[in-house]
Amino acid sequence: MKEDQDQSVLKYRFANGRTEKRNFKKMKSFSIPSLFKSELISRVKEVRRLGDKLKKNFKPSVFDFGSVEILLSRHFGFCYGVENAVETAYKIIEDNPQKRIFLLSEMIHNPAVNADLLDLGVKFIQDTYGNQLVAWDTLTKEDIVIIPAFGTTLEIHAILDKIGIDLYAYDTTCPFVEKVWNRANQIGQNKYTVVVHGKPSHEETKATFSHSKVVTPTLIVKDLEQAKRLAYYIRKEKPSQEFYEEFEGQFSQGFDPERDLERIGVVNQTTMLAIDTQEIVEYLKAEIVRFYQLEPHQITAHFADTRDTLCYATNDNQSATYGLIAEEADFAIIAGGYNSSNTSHLVDLCQEKLPSYFIKSAEKLISENEILHFDNKNKEEVLIQGFVPQKPKVRVLLTCGASCPDAVIEEILRKLVSFFPDAKGVDEVVENWTLAQA
Image 1 (cartoon, rainbow, N blue to C red):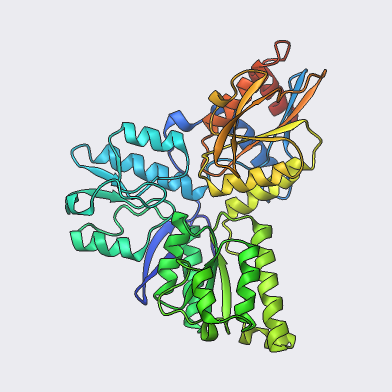
Image 2 (image 1 turned 60 degrees about the vertical axis):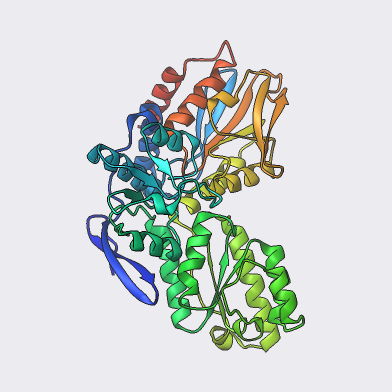
């Protein structure tokens, strides 16, 4: 099917072996609440879009304020799925002032968006870890329940259906997440076991696992280290009992490693680091080729030929981050929710190259000497002193994840510039940059 921006394309969902389909507009424009917008950042993005419509140039935008230079990533911020989810949620609130409105869990992994929804009276049924905040038996068929961009499990679908709540009326599942479900369905229909590269506790991975396991045996691997441990069972070098202990909670009911690891295909959580997924795919394929002594034309007998299932925004943001860290700089700032998977991976990429600080808002830039940085490894905020080097000209890399509003990036940019008293004005520099790009 030709995917044209002005055409409707079919979006599929499978459940209990049945395929559902819905129409949606490919890459439509969205109306996002003004508190998340930034006229300044929108202007920068539009200039870059017009000058690079094929998205081949991943070099950052460079803003020279004199004593500080800020390099802004080519791609960052709200993606299609996030914009769709946010717009839909706010429209539902506006159109249903007399109804109780619930979200299954966080709309997206961004604290500003979720806090505003809570302020508007929306209640979360579960937290991001799946802990119940609102009992299912307190819901009625008159209530509105919004399914977030991550999608949800078939088990939760069944609960909502039993209550009498329409499963699809307020479903904001990202089409790129559903693309993964479709791929898993195709793999399963061809008698492959599905291996999901993702974080077992992440809402999206749990949803993909749930949809896949009704079609075919399914297993989650969280990283290359787990994939290497899985290879022992592919090569039949370890007994099944050890598999059940090692991968507890990550395989579907009735999974038999002796049988179900002979034919596999890999899909992923859409926000995982592309290079990590590819490494897992290549490693598992090589192990299967070696064990079964396969010739190239025989590989698909044991390993499904799947294309990458990362979403376009994850690919763009990661490619742009590689372009960003190719530049010389003193440090990087990465903004986003601390439980945002795609943002965390951007942090990991930056930290390999230079000092990098993960913050969720401009408030974490306490002063020109102190920053409250989120330590991804230990999952805690850490006060860092002296993060701005004392030198005539400082270079800073700036980016954010796919669930971070443009308004947050503008606030961070302005705050950073304010730490340099003799710096040129933000609006003046951006205006001159815009004119220079014309």
